[in-house]
Length: 219
Image (cartoon, rainbow, N blue to C red; front, side, top):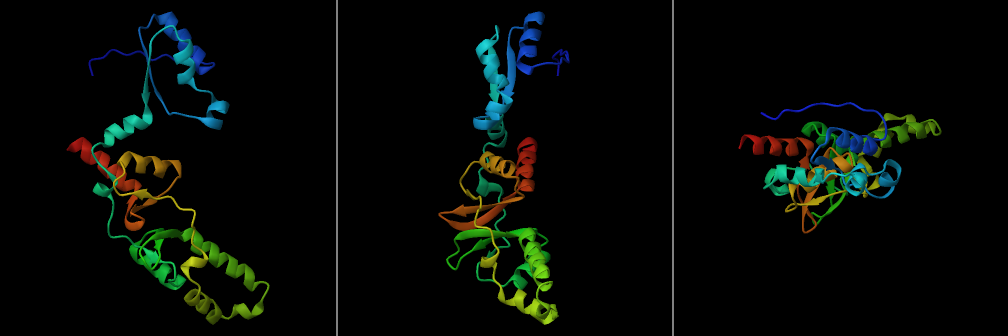
């Protein structure tokens, strides 16, 4: 508000065109955000920020997108916005029970804990549907499985441990909320289990993060 701006559209190599425009317009400062790319992404895509910082004739002000997100979410930590009433399941629980829990709670997945309450995995609708598809494929090779009772028995006897994913991502309850937001985006997760000293204490979703942003803006 109150700042006069002008839009310029150019084609070409991004960093080169930005340097050209800056020289042509006699600008005093180049300000831009950076996503802190590294490794393979940086090799393939190049770093516009790095190019400008090294070769521009004007001062360059770089704002870290990740740091900006952290500032926007300050002073929240994960435990401030996480859901404590978690639809968790145990690793020895029957698949029948899991299906009912997910449908009753209207969630698409759940964290898995052992007898001590420690987080050991996650199970999702995808895992359950994949199990169902494998069983159907197996019936095509074994006619004895066509009996519906066999299917029900399998659901009642097979446990979460047999199909859960142990390649899980979690976060500590006292971690900054920005760290949770980063993990949700980086790993394309819908929900993120929250732990304290290894034990499951809650879960945080994308909606929880958005709610925190809204609370900060209106608070």
